[in-house]
Length: 93
Image (cartoon, rainbow, N blue to C red; front, side, top):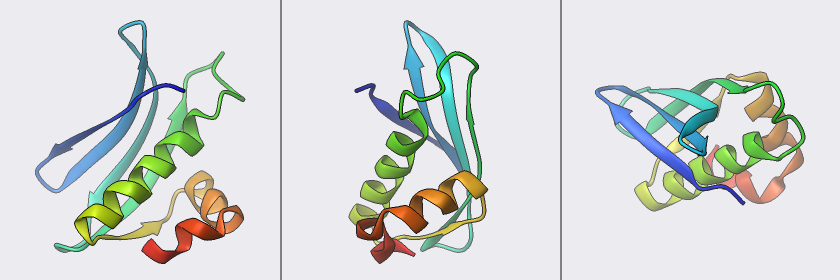
């Protein structure tokens, strides 16, 4: 399993996975107030499909949201599909 990292700049940020020093997956979000984020885009570089990178990033976002008492609004279709499938994640919605 690859390590998911978080970068925050001002009122936006992203989770990403790097492989051998190259960013291979990224999920972006923007803050909606102090206690909500909107996940707006998820992308995985070609050749990395099926490796679970997208779900790993959503999982990391859920863990981070729980730790920081933040709610998530998944506008990104991929992120929304993960929340629809994984009922354990819904406490942060």
